[in-house]
Image (cartoon, rainbow over all chains, first blue to last red; front, side, top):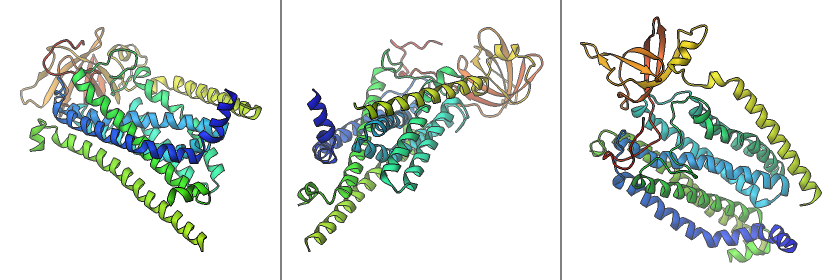
Length: 247
Length: 51
Length: 140
């Protein structure tokens, strides 16, 4: 057991084995993403029935909810990477952390913009300073802060630790976003999807939504893998294994 | 026409979906471009090392 | 896990607990300011009665929506099932505005129980279902 753990921490989490494993997985991740995304897109736009109140306008859910889900899931993933970086100094965790920030910012931006486009016809306004919208805007600023932080620190070790620490501080925002619609009165409605109880959406509308959420997460995995592999290739270029890979 | 197809919500749907597609494809394109760049850089280094 | 790693983990946990409680206290102190609206009951019970620049939220009472002759000014009752306020509004209503729907109304309170609105927003529920009402009945 101890020896297995030792092997994992020394070999299994090395940049070289990550490069190999991710190279093997990437085609499957990409294929899965494409299949789920196309299904979600077509089924969401044309086959899901129109909503009883919002009519066809509700179809924005198929890009809005997956974006918001990804924005928060990416931050959650980054928080885990930050702990792994700070406590165990695992290199691929800090690579994953720095490769995730702009993706998280991108999806938060999408959640805000698609929500705004959805809010105008339904609620009657593009924007309102309610607890949910404001806390998601703060998440966007946190991502922006992390991107700025990682681009101004030249020393890699210092940069990874500073970004990890700031990620942990910003993680307090995650439960605030999630519970904002319960703790305070807001214009944004409560959660439709739930892990532990029945979802409040008809099955025919739910299926494309779940496919889109999975597709967005696979997309995140795909881009993060691509970015981490690029960084690894450059930082490890003096090693033997890179030479072998490129020949 | 699109607006009619989705009963008045076509433009909202179109702008939300196209925004999403644009952002996602930008991420993808940039990642692939930097892959090419990284490979080039490492290959240049390796060929210099041989000399 | 060696001793150094244990220490670092402990430091992180202590930091998160402290920051979390600080954030919790701030949010608790600001509770009333973060809420987007008062319910009619909350508004009528608050002392001193705020009058200007407030928002109320509640259901649009059934059969209470009435347009004036020109069709530009609308009058309806917002209720939380205990207290009600009459709202007068001139302007465009959002698509989801209808009787029985939850709305958020911004404006000022005129005595007695009358609210002059400059903003009407419709809230929508967590439920999504097709138009043909079947198994998934919508509860208001």
